[in-house]
Length: 297
Ligand code: PEP
Ligand code: MN
View 1 (cartoon, protein in one colour):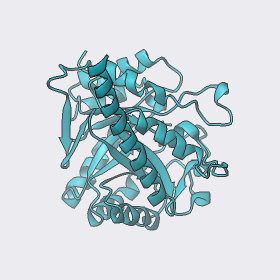
View 2 (cartoon, protein in one colour; view 1 turned 60 degrees about the vertical axis):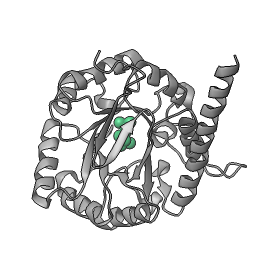
View 3 (tube, helix red, strand yellow; view 1 turned 180 degrees about the vertical axis):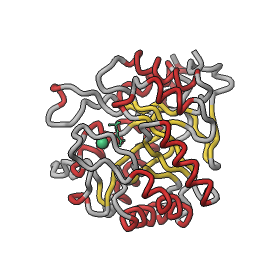
View 4 (cartoon, protein in one colour; view 1 turned 30 degrees about the horizontal axis):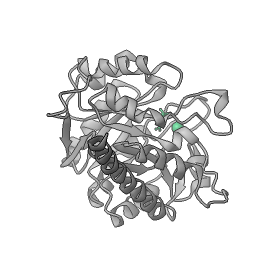
């Protein structure tokens, strides 16, 4: 298996647009679930730049359960999304593709603009076993790939599906946990599976991402501790050693065209980033503690 763990002495990593991805690095990708206007894109990127963030998420091609809902602006929004990313120093945009032709559309626009930014091609949970799509994102080496696990298949089946990407020629891959579909998760949208971060880090050589927005599906920010459920879930992933976060936000959450209930507001972003920082420090402390105890025991 290409994605099997490597020798601990030479851990796997890849670098894209100056950012290194490995099981020892961490990057947040916070942004629009679905691009709806240049104004929304600019508002989000402006805040991200203020806080030194170099990555975001921007959905252009949205696979929707109902065909009567907004399916994304597709290639129409790519020129302004990429241009604004260049303006705000965003180096990588996680962007879902649902068809091989979308990769060509992204190529064309980035070529036309002289590559002001980079893209991480995302394959969604609904395409977790779309082997032709997985082979297509694997046949190219221009963009790394974010593989989201299937919400209704076993972890082993998702790992095998991700292996299709690597086998096709591209192991610059991040494996993303995004919650499992089950009635048992109610009132959350999915059952957060972030306790599997360490398991995946043991089974795979790739960095591991968590998506608390899709796992939880609602902000629920009337908790007595003032921390909304999405904050809690994100922290649970980070304190367990996740290497990447994928998070939805919107300048005006109630007006988001897709998954409005799970979007953080831009005002909450600095708070969220600070909360994540606490979790990162706590994970580091846990590593130090573990090292100490390993020597004692
Ligand atoms: C998304 O990240 O926009 C998305 C649709 O996620 P998932 O495939 O995990 O549902
Ligand atoms: Mn969604």
